[in-house]
Length: 410
View (cartoon, rainbow, N blue to C red):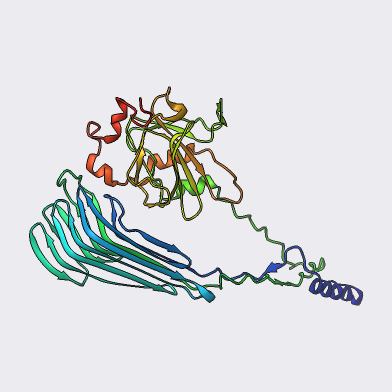
């Protein structure tokens, strides 16, 4: 018995010196994060004066609007974010002057909104000056308030919106549900580890358990630890809040990997729809490489803050928001379905690719199941351009390419 106890003592001592394969590593606190974003105006009629920062820095924006349904004489935005030393803070502010929406249905002399965040706490403030709804003066408003009149629902000083206006019926050619937010702000700040520090994780040595005593009938049996199932990029994207990339009656071919004469294997799916069908941003993100190439025709990339990238090709024309470097919201009109580039002999369609930011996945994935999920149960935005034209194909600017492709000059 003494010999057996001595052997066990030696084993325990060795376990203290040499780490077993299952040694635990002390977890490091996540880095602090901070973000702020502000827009003079946002919503279904477009984005004006956007400024945005992530983790650190400052940015300012200015803008005005003179478009159908939204007139703003001028506005400005300012955002900042910091997380030095693990202490996070963020602030966003927006101001709009001389606002007139939906042909004067809602007007305001001035709208301001500010959001300030620090260590998970968020404070908002602002006011609306000289508000009038459907011809009735509401005066100056500095508390959260709402009204319904003249086919419109108006909310002031609520959450991140200085003024939120939503149509409850068709007005001035705009569909019910069309929404505009004036002085739109958001801020987030959560303390954490200093992002500039990169400490080396130190292992915590855990003594190896003594082997079960074969003479002890009460010795515990080892418990099986089931492995955590891995979520694939396809599963993550299918579960997320995304917008289907083409509006209307659309059929996406399951043609990922099909042979192509020039480019090799097909890296996406072709989504067939009528000429001029609106092409939408599937998520919030930044546009880049907006332009035209011989094979892809009119094409662009959309990249999210998470790093996922989406590629669109063969558009007949671009929408007004399709500018490289521009931040867009999910549902923003990017362009119209067509057959530019090497797709000219084919029916109109959008070539769509998904490039997830995933350590286990490099390059494009087969988007078919993801697209089917988005199409069957995804978000259905009203969209600024959609709110005005809806399913009226006779009025669609994009349908001009049915007669003549102006970009190709034919």
